[in-house]
Length: 311
Image (cartoon, rainbow, N blue to C red; front, side, top):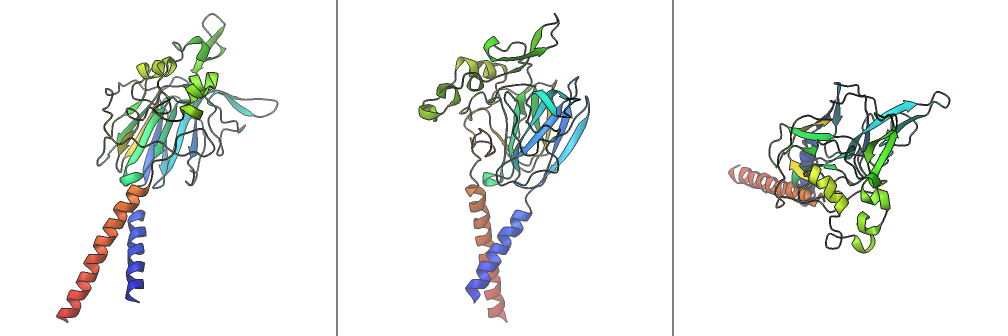
């Protein structure tokens, strides 16, 4: 019976520690001159947030409260409108295809600049990145606020890549200065050409065979802290502990220089319905918590034995 009590006590402490995990806020700030429509997709096994999409006026901000251990991605849709005859909502870039302002669990159609999060992941760290693996549609910056430890570095892509995007990668729409079309998004090579070499699939599905291409180098040279292709982990994934985050669209501030690649290199959020990388393993946090539980159990039993001997 005593062993059952100890097991119950251990698991009670385990779930107690989990309940103390940090609940973060993610603030979305629109510094663009146009309205944008953020989209939100929660990761596999993560409860969806109360909103999956909304409009955000220029200079406006919106605060999202996210639960502990949340994972997912956030992006901005641009050039959106509602068809007056059908009532269907759609966007020229990063559309989620729901036909409504809320994405309802749908992905961003590439090309799209993505903010990716896995909060309270392995070892209790938050993992975050800005990804251009699916291409680029808008400048974006992530800034951690109030983090207790970890790298906690601002990251993102603050450059406007649409004008300099290689012609074969451009997504164009009307509204150019000469009355013609202009580039409003920039595809990745995978999205544009669909080959295994560019998509890091098939025989190229590992970092030894899938190397940076001239196209991914275009993204990396302009945005050195952002993911430029699938195995660009070493300089593109960042960590922090117990932080809140500010995502700014069309930021004006500068970013730090390229980070060293010797830091933890887990991958980003697992969005099972999208073509993305897998989540960082949670074994590290489980092990750390279990060690803490074991130590407290030992202290508890030692106190009980001391109380019995002194009684």
